[in-house]
Length: 192
Ligand SMILES: Cc1cc2nc3c(=O)[nH]c(=O)nc-3n(C[C@H](O)[C@H](O)[C@H](O)COP(=O)(O)OP(=O)(O)OC[C@H]3O[C@@H](n4cnc5c(N)ncnc54)[C@H](O)[C@@H]3O)c2cc1C
Image 1 (spheres, rainbow, N blue to C red):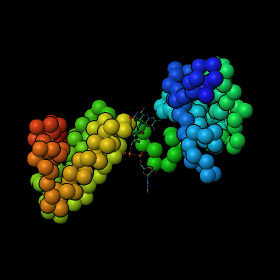
Image 2: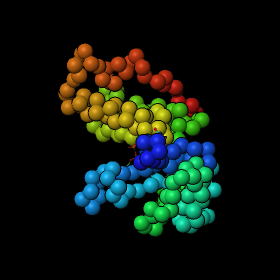
Image 3: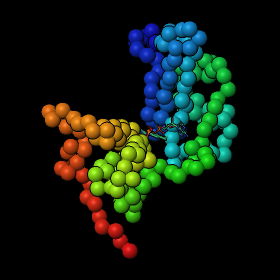
Image 4: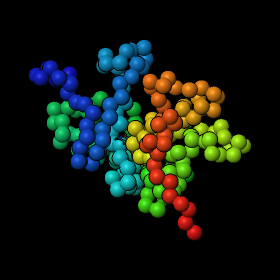
């Protein structure tokens, strides 16, 4: 807390400087409740693509130093470094095994895959033996890379499971499958 303003000295930060996105995680750690000055975690830089690739050659401490330098320019009165209680950890998404990039199945030329994945929860036209498996999450989202799309696919999957088990929505509160014909994405024919 900044006594001169009565407001928090630092908060979640979105910036066009190097860190791009800085997130603060307060935690109920070591028996202390959130917000009482107990140990916490800072996500110093949450980035992807060009922004994160620039950091790939740097070690964790070098990355931290860069980010703290940027933050010092944004928050000149906050000495983040003096609060460090553990060495920095870093994950480079692009260096992880099985990384297939953001927006897979959402790129030009992939519409047919995307449409089939996204709408798979509507299984009435599938042969009986192919029914009953429901996927959810970013991998089948209509808007991969955005949490909203992942949540949307979860709601679709829940509707699919309910339907598979013989359930139904309240008519006053229709689910995604009930209004599918109205909102379904266009199905394109296969091309050879
Ligand atoms: C750098 C970055 C910035 C982003 N910024 C934004 C943003 O500003 N706004 C926004 O809306 N979205 C943003 N997103 C996207 C958002 O994070 C995702 O769309 C969302 O998290 C997808 O949710 P999900 O549940 O489908 O998958 P995830 O959140 O990836 O969850 C999948 C979970 O499955 C676990 N898992 C994987 N394999 C296994 C296994 N074999 N067994 C058990 N568990 C397993 C993983 O550990 C993970 O916890 C960002 C993503 C990234 C990478």
